[in-house]
Every structure is written in structure tokens, then in C-alpha cells.
Amino acid sequence: MALSIPENFSLNHTHFQFKNQQGFYSGKVRDVYDLGERLLVITTDRISAFDHILPRPIPFKGQVLNSIAGYFLNDVKDIVDTWLIDMPDPNVSYGYKCTPIKIEMVVRGYLTGHAWRVYQKGIRSLCGVALKEGMVADQKLDTPIITPTTKAESGHDEDISIEEIKTQQLVEEKLIDEMVEKALQLFERGTIRAKERGLILVDTKYEFGLREGKLVLMDEIHTPDSSRYFEADRYEERLHSGDPQKQLSKEFVREWLIAHGFQGLDGQIMPEMSDSMVWMISDRYIELFERLIGKEFDRKEHPENILNRLEKNLTAFL
Image (cartoon, rainbow, N blue to C red; front, side, top):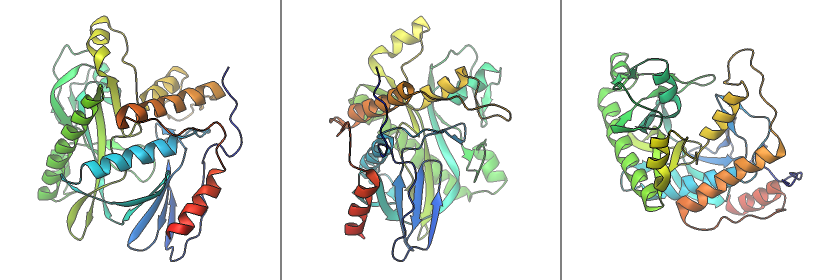
């Protein structure tokens, strides 16, 4: 029987007021504090899917996301500059303020998730990239492809092709070419790291910005919110038997929502999530952390009030 979730076990919202704070933004998952030339980003335990925030936070999710993102942001600094400077708390990242580029670079190595849902409709072109006939769910693509999306302030992000980005002059041609190059290099690095841990990096997204005229990698990277992972040792067996791959990512949450009649469309009602489902999601996030990072996650049954810990650590840091 799953444990009930005690009060203060999860971090749902923050409302700090820091010295020299110039602004505050609460996103789907992160609370962002503008400190002038720097940003302080608190990764909460909120979870979103289909551009909706689910009603219940997931214990430890924020710590998992922040820890994985920090690990990989430091791992790829030889490929591209990143926004990250420091991590003063398990849920907090501190780094440079950049000017966001309003295009997400989605890199796909396999036909799954959104790409598979599009393919099932009989569509054989995704963001200007041709998809061959006769493919099956979760099949590996001949080579990784980039399927960008426009970064919406609210609502759904929209698919767009590289050529459309250039034609509409959404991003300077030289810059979008650099983003393509860096995104593929980052995906290759993530693929290598995943393979070292017995995993497959299926697809992911990268968000870039500009700082002093240079391209900078922003936001999270290679986390279960921004990426999909499969288990390498069972991949071929499951593919040929037609069994679904184990989703070590947020995709299984999307699948659960779809099975319960919710895809974020008008008139659809968000299904209620039980304690046992919340714990299962938490366990999946922790499992992926341990497999990707290669060490045990520091998990306690009844942690201190997270807000108190945050206040203590951030007061000392700032």
C-alpha cells in the first residue's frame, strides 16, 4: 500500500523576495527570479503535460530535474556555453540571464511520442523532414532529425521546419545553422552518456539564448521532462514483439492522461491522480536519476519543510 503524502513533502510554489530582485516569473515547473544580470531558478515539484499543469506535485521531482540538468549542463560546456553558474540548493540553479531564442530545437532519434502520433495519422513529413513508409512505433530513425517548435508564451508550441524559420526570418540564418549544429552535437553527447548507463536517449529538446552576442544553452538538458529514454537491453526484444518500451521519462504520464481521456483539448477534464500514481511517477523520476547519474538518490521518508531549507540555503548564498 502506497504511503500517503504528508504536508510540506513537495514543493509546489515559492514566493521569495530577494535583495535586488527585478522580476519574477512562474512557469509550468520553474519559478524564475530576475536578479539583474543573473537568474535564480527554483525547480518545483510541479508537473505538466499537454501544456497543462497537473493538480498534484510529485515528491522529489524538482530535485531530480535540477540535479540531472546541472550534471549535463556541466558535461557539455566543451560543446557550447551554458547559462549555469552554480547550484546553491538541490532545487536551485543560478546563472546568466540570456536573451531567449523563441525556437525549441527538438532532436529525435526514434519514432515515438508526438512523432509517432503524427505518423499514425498517415502524415509522412514532420517539420519538413520526410519519414519513410512502413515504420512501427519506437523504431530507430536512420539518422537523428531536428523537428523545431515555436516557443509559445502560453498554449501549445507549434511545429515548424528549419526552412520556414529561415523564410520567415524568425532567426538569422547563420544563427539557426549554428543551433542545428550544436543541437546535433549535444544529442550525440547525450546518446553516449545514456549508452554508458544502459539507456537509449530517444529524443530531447534544447533551448538556446544569446549572451553578449554568443550562443548559450539555456534551461534544462537531458532530464525526464525534456527527454525520453528507453532501456537498451530490452529495446530490440520489445520492438520486435510489439510490446511498449518502458518509459523512463514523462511520456508514460502523457500516456496515462490519454488513456483517461485527456490531451489538453477544450472540454476535456483533467483526471484525478491517486496517491499511488503520484508515488509511481516519483519512483520513475528517481530511477532515471540513479541510472543516469550512477549514484543513489538522497531520499528521506519525511524530509524537512523544503521551503525552510530553501530559505536557509539561499540566504547564505545571496
